[in-house]
Every structure is written in structure tokens, then in C-alpha cells.
Image 1 (cartoon, rainbow, N blue to C red):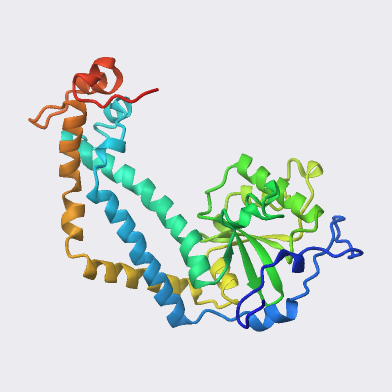
Image 2 (cartoon, rainbow, N blue to C red):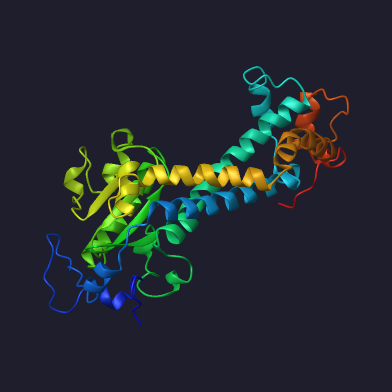
Length: 327
């Protein structure tokens, strides 16, 4: 049943009907039975709602990241003795503490970026902007269980209908192989009339002028191999401010509201987590103790690189305290 203010994502209303006219690529143009209802239901997310929702998700995100620091990291962190020795002078890795600080920053940095991307994808878009995320439950249902939907992350209802959204993090977060995969899936969606009102590749930070040329490939644009590709006029790439405004009924201030919500959530998390600085500040010292136990390192704090190499790589590393892992 349709509810006022709630978009309808039932696919019978999105698929092409028999006898539908063809688009320029030979695919059927989707016909929307509920287009009028969708236009009534689309409402811009207001400033206060956007800030509050983003703040809530940011605070929860920081809580998840802090839990990483409260647990043992050394058990899941593998030391590359070759790389660490190469970077010794580059990053001033002079003792076990400086090694732990470097490892911790590198390990957490990647996790922070991945976790933040998941927050935007899995929390902010569906919870704040009411997109329909294609989660595992959705992908059990036809036609979402088709391979050509693998790169579609959300359905976004606009005033003129539903768009398919493929979400990316930054200007360079796509390689040629990935771009070609996106192109092939987008091409197939169009040929089968499943592109709905269009496909948007959304890049949530960066701007169009900084995007790698691989983002042109997803639209079927390739100067060197254009004869082998078809330009897809139903695919758009929107980056940075353009993406956030498009997502929220063309409100240009949306990205500023997102940043305001992130700042608010971070401040609230700090206020509600009095031991955060202590946990974060002492993490490197705790990691030193974990590495000593794992690899049998000297309690004096110095690094014996040859000893570390054998502790990591040799079978006798088990005798030195390193954890054995079954192949």
C-alpha cells in the first residue's frame, strides 16, 4: 500500500510495459504507474533534520571506531619487516613505540576511511535522505538479483521519478577495470529497459574538474576506443556539491548541512565519552605491549630488525611468541 510521503519502490511500477516506446539505444523506456504519487511524496530534507540525522550517524560511527582501540589490535595487525625497515628513516621509526605509532596510524587510517564510506552509504543516505538501499534482502528479489545491478547501491526518488545511484567515495576511487565493469552493467540496464529515469554515479567528495577520466568511461566515453563503446545518455556523474544538492531536491546548501552535522556529532561524542582522549592517546603504548607478546620483542624498547624478521617469517617465530596461523 502506498503511504503519503513514502516513495514506492515496487518494481512492477518501474519496469517497461508491453509496447513501450524505445529509447535511442533500443531499450524500452520505463513507464511509472506511480509517478504522480512520487511527485507528491518527494520532500526536501530540511536543515535541522539533515544536521540532526548526520550528527547521530557520526556519533555512532566514532563509537564504532573507538571500540577498535579498546580491543587488542596487535592480534589482527601483521608487521611487514621489510617495509618497516625501508621506512625506518623516512618515518623516524627509531624504537618500538614509534613503530607502534606508525602501524596504528596506518591501520586505523584505512579503517576510518572504509568505515566512513560505509556510514555515508548504509546510514546517511537511507536514514537521512530516505533513499532505498539495495541491501542483501533487496538483492534476493528479481530483478535486483541480476548481475547488472551489482554496481547499483541505492534507488533515489526525485520529482520526475526514481534514479539508480552508484556511490563512490572520491575523485580517484575507481580504476579502469572497475570503470569498464560499470559501463557494461549500465549498458545492459539500458538495453533491458531497467535504467528507470536514469543512472547517477555519485562521488561524495571532490568536484567534476578533479575526477579521473575513468569516470568518463562509465558513461561510454573513451577517446581512444570510442568505436568500441556506446555513449550512454542516461548516465550522469555528479561529484561533491553537485551530488549533495542533487540528492536533496537541488538544495545547494546540503553539503554544508552535512558538514555541520558531522561537527555536531563529533562534539557530542566527545562530550559523552570522557575517556576518549585517554583511550586514543594510550593506544600506541598498549600496541607496543601486544607486539612484544606476539613477537617476543625486547622489553628495552629497541628494535632488532633481524630478530623481528625471524619472529614474523620463520617457523621458530612460534617459539619467540608469534601466533601460529594455519595455512
